[in-house]
Image (cartoon, rainbow, N blue to C red):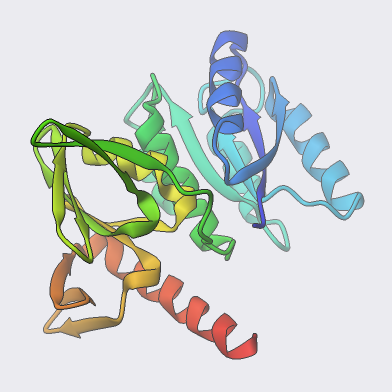
Length: 249
């Protein structure tokens, strides 16, 4: 599976170390470079391009000494092949700047792992990194005093029920005490994608995508699952790219 090369930029060392740790823990990321200011970040980016190993995404603090994150983000947007930008900041008021720069995401500190996982997923989709099935993960399920282990490979889609999640397989469903956001992060590398605030779907099981009067759904087996407006475009683009790759193989 192709992995992302990313750069984390923050002038506060503890924040930079925390972000780097979380980034390295994600299986979709292969390399994490770090910089303490905008000038150092530009040097690293130029060196990576010269070496033929350009950075895929920059996770960028905004308020930094010298060259701040907004100015750096604008400079990056002028690159011939600009890296994706994800702002990581303690301040909400720069969201408009992030929108103008066309940043992939805007994360508020302290960064929650599930939000970072979502940002990485957006970067991976934008960078056209294939979403492939990773190693199977299992979850213990209690059934009348018997513990059964359900594999992620057998799950078709997941439905949120508060702090619980219902795992739907081809043979039945199981309610487990795991938040949907946790499974989204845990199973991202296994080909699962968030399509709605209440649903996580295994991409390999999506058979059809329907868009009618602005409303979008996907069909998995006999089930129609709603797709929220903010997920529609990236899901459609992901399915189109997978279909094109399938025809080329």
